[in-house]
Picture (cartoon, rainbow, N blue to C red):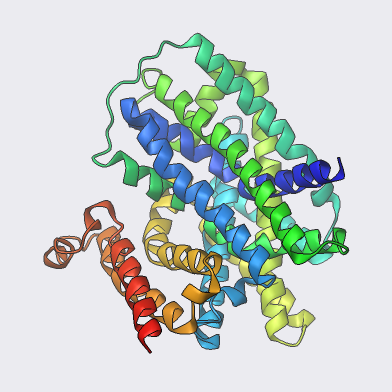
Length: 423
């Protein structure tokens, strides 16, 4: 019975880690545009937003380390640079997006105030909570996720029984890759490598008497349960968006669609309640990101409190600067960055999950370098230089799906392992 309880508690912790409030705005619009290919979009989204992040937790369970340890086999310098880039992205994109989501979900429908005002107040409060490390948010977080899940299940259930199974036509040329790329925007693979270690440490503290194998088994069981729960919610939201394709204008924004779906299924009062819950969940995410980044910089400067404070200030200033823009703009700005860093993150997660005999330092170097090189064309395509590099992308398999790095990385993995065996 204790094992069942431990598994469920750990599964809920993992679910809460990946089920960020910002993620809620992504699946409905995917379904809204997916039409009768909603299932293919769902498959792609779940690979990048569920499978890869859960694998990241499995990697943490094996490494028993931090973000820095993910890239150590490439080189210590690479591991440090990779860590710094990941933390810079975290405070520069997903953290400000939480302020923008809060404005569009909870402020904009009721008050005619600018984004910048919300952003300034929001990150001023974030800074106060970061500097005081209040446990209020941890306690609050335990109630936020269940409450949001209940509302979402109601929305999904009401939609399923109220709307005809009319899917419409897809607007995506490649529904599967569209789902994968939208899954990048959850930032959950990055979340897995950044804060996954916190959950592993918590498990170790609670289960000191258990062996390493028992702890790893616990993480795997919890991971499967959390993954299945995420699949139900994400697939449900995508399907909900699909069924409501006639209810809204085709150019509707992500947050407006979530608001609209909530009002049509639950009414204005429930929508206000959802807005408050999502805003609080966004706030806890922002505090976690800024705190985690400041802790990392602090650790690089001999536990200097000054370094922590300066990093927290920079993180909040960046949040105000970027958080004054609307959600869709921040998502558009994030895409080029994600097209470059996400493949590297995915590869590091996969390599750290595979057996060590297949992932020597030589293999790590070969696969990571190959992934970096072949991510450049996808990155250039995402910033509007697709025509310039089209002669290159035309000969790279899967480049048309913005995944030109996949096959070269796999070939590098096989080749480096074969070479190592011959030596």
